[in-house]
Image (cartoon, rainbow, N blue to C red; front, side, top):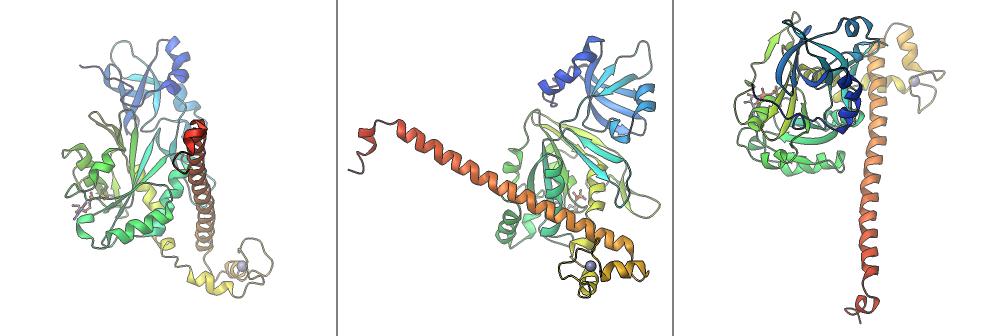
Amino acid sequence: QTTTDLTVLGWSNFFELNMAPFAQEGMVPARVMRQDRGVYQVQAHSGRLAAELSGRLQHEAASQADLPVVGDWIALKPQQGDGPDVIHAVLERQSCFSRKEAGMRTDEQVLCANIDTAFIVSSLVGERGFVPRRIERYLTLVWDADVEPVVLLNKLDLCEEVERYVNQTEEIAPGVPVYAVSALTGEGMEETFAHLNPGKTVVLLGPSGVGKSSLINALLGEDTVKTGQVRAEDGRGRHITTWRELLILPGRGVIIDTPGMRELQLWADEEALDGSFSDINAMAANCRFRDCTHQREPGCAVRAAVEAGTFEASRLDSYLRQQTELSYLERRKDQHARKIEQDKWKSIHRSVKSLNKIDPKRRWEKGS
Ligand code: GDP
Ligand code: ZN
């Protein structure tokens, strides 16, 4: 078996430092590639191995978030004799996507870890076509996870108003790279490729049908992920994905393709995307305060309706959640725009400085 250069997989000084105490005890680092119930496939320097959680990790994990997920770097204790190797510890994460159960105060569920870049995929056409509000919500999520966003507007080959949509996207995502692409024809893929580098981990986010599998195929250059075939139906007739995997792109870093990214699509609840809270807005006309947030103001007509049982509490919840997300997004957008502005001034400042270094006599030569 050939050995694997872990730096191509994203191994860095950060993890090296975290690994040190475990390395002293004879453990080796590995990255979680795939997770099927209790069995983990991990990639170590020596190759691909099957591993299990140590009893301690299994029983003493304070929360779900302490258990390994795809993308995690772990300390592996090689097993003597046969039997799977043992995952002893999860190394500190540099970033992660997680899901908090809506409305309930439950455990944070981590979906995948140590991601550098997220491709937010939207389609330019069709039923699941261009929805700016959805892109905004994915942006919130990506910024929140400390991951770098890139927006891919797919199915360029079917769209006639590409420029308008690109401009509109750039407006809601200041400073974020936005590319119109076609997984089918390969158009625009060059720019996308530039964001895939050795040691970097990418995840694709977006609702089903926008072309994530097709894009992964195009990036891999082969039919590793069979388009539309990784899904099965669960008891409720929903489409679910039955496997999770981290794919290595030769010379290009790694892509995580997990159902996690599809679970995120459940989070982006479609109803809220239409802004179809017209019922709440209508009731709000009867709130005592015109700027009522329907949280704890006296004389709130919306809460009154909830208490009277004529309005669904969960619907108010999802409305409030959306408001929180949107105000958070506005703040992040402001920060981002400010940073771009600062960077611009920094570079102007730098060029002025270097201008000052030029011999003052020469500096005015042109103008004199
Ligand atoms: P996913 O659910 O996001 O993984 O989407 P898929 O990759 O399964 O694609 C959904 C459908 O869109 C499939 O029928 C693809 O063939 C089609 N599709 C994906 N990308 C493109 C594209 O760039 N152009 C066109 N015309 N069709 C595409
Ligand atoms: Zn109110």
